[in-house]
Amino acid sequence: MNEQQKLENIIINENAYFFSNDNNIRITNSKINLLFREVSSVKSGNYLLKKIRETINVDGINIIYSFCTFKFNSKPTFIDKVVNDWIETKLAYLLIVEVNDHIVISRKNISKVQDFVKQFNALDYSILSTLFVTDETLLEKFNLKNLNVSDKALREKSLEAIDLRENFSALGANNYMLNSLRVNNNDEKISLSLNSSRINKLGRKNSIEQFCGWAKNLIDQINGHTDRATFLSVFAEPQDYESLKDSITPISVLFVFSKLYNDFENGIINRSFIEYIHNDGEIIERNIDLLKHLNKFERLSKVEEDNNLYFINNNSVNDIQLRFNEKSISIRSQKLKSIILERDNGTQLSLIDYINTSGGYVINFENIDLVYSNRKLFKDNRLLGNIEHFMKIFISHPELNNSLSEKGSFIPVQIDFNNNSLFKFVEDTYLNDFDYFICDDLGREWADHIGINEDKIVLFHSKFDTTQFSASAFQDIVGQAQKNLGNVSPQDYQLDGKRDFWNSQYISTTGVATSINRLRKGDNINNAINLYKSATNNPNFHGEVHLVINFISKSNLETNLKLLKANTPFGQRNETIQILWFISSLIASTQEVNTNVFIHTKP
Image (cartoon, rainbow, N blue to C red):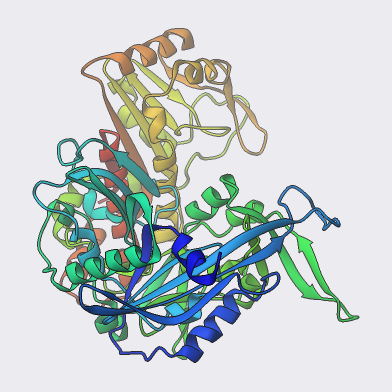
């Protein structure tokens, strides 16, 4: 084949990243040549094909495209060290299309394009999410990401149906951002990745010329699009980061590594290692088990400001910063930059670049209802408006003013928890409301106490803390409740596995074997378990989760929330913002599993 025949032989999916060139960045031959050199630095031999800013005419419009393809060698993922002749040869391509004020990129097995791409703007979230949505569109699939900062909340979920308009509940949808979706318009299916500005029309492949025509038609559609309310307006509302960035102050960050776990699980990332230079100048690679260390990061961390620099308070890595850029907020850390991820196609990138590219973090601000995730700023329009409704789950108890501990102290002969302990309060207040009452504290606990009736299961979680109005203590108990929501209605084998534990007497964390029976009320554990199983099968079954805490006063919380809503400065502002988000997260989590929640506090 000659060069033209090779070019005409190339077929590409209508699947590309779309960017707007709002700042009229000038693209030159030398810029494209430089980009091609960077992305092909691993190539083996010469380019198989290379075209720099060629012009084709589509419907009377001149379109410029650049294309390169090359071979590169990589070590197979199933061997540790390089072995002669054990080398995989792969092909890569990069196609860049310039259409008026937009840039369209299609690629395979390509990395190192970030510096080029960051000159341009991703398509606006509100445009991309509604571009292909009409009243007749079938909404086939949603991928949703939770904007709440509780580390035990459901982080991500996918929903799929013939048309999700018909069976998707909008309850709590304002807590989620729409990460991607698939739509169907007259049997033409299109997948949209809103965080990466990618449009994928599912179907046959086309020539480069046909691809350019598809890109041109889409850009015409984008330019003619007007923002409007659709069914998708129920989700968190995107905000203009550039106009707000100078007025927002971060207070906390939660790292979310769902995508990284998925990429390891699916073999997209095959290893992680630290790269350093030995004394003799040799570059040394040391493989590390990255996944083992990630759980140290997946907890809400405070952000501290020092001379206009924002540092993330993390016990494992002490050099993590937030950086406010012109178009986004990014994470900086030299230590995380030294950790390298290797993809299955042989390309490599640092962990910090991966985190920034994937948007693997959620940021809260002093601006109460704003949250940053997936490289976008969002607003929960219902957060402040729901405060009065949120307060309905709080129940105040004067007795909690006298609480001195969570469980009290222990001696072998005691048969009850100490007076003035939270455990004793729970039993004195609620034990008689149930046929069976069990203390499940310690071990692989589902709750501190469990109440069982013929049509009702209640999990009680207790938390004592000496620090008043503690957001971190509240995060702990909210996380405990969220991770155990499934145990409101567990499977039979799980209940059977609890039999011996529930049939025992309480042993404290210090090893004191008490005479406190874990079965606090009822005739025997076998009947308790049978009633638990029967209750969850009852058509009128309902579950409840109760949090019992001593470190928050309901009246103090109400006062702080009113000050927050009025935008009045006060000393516990940051703690109140975090607590409000945790309340919202907890309510959303319990609503999703049709479970009621109550929080018991001091008056």
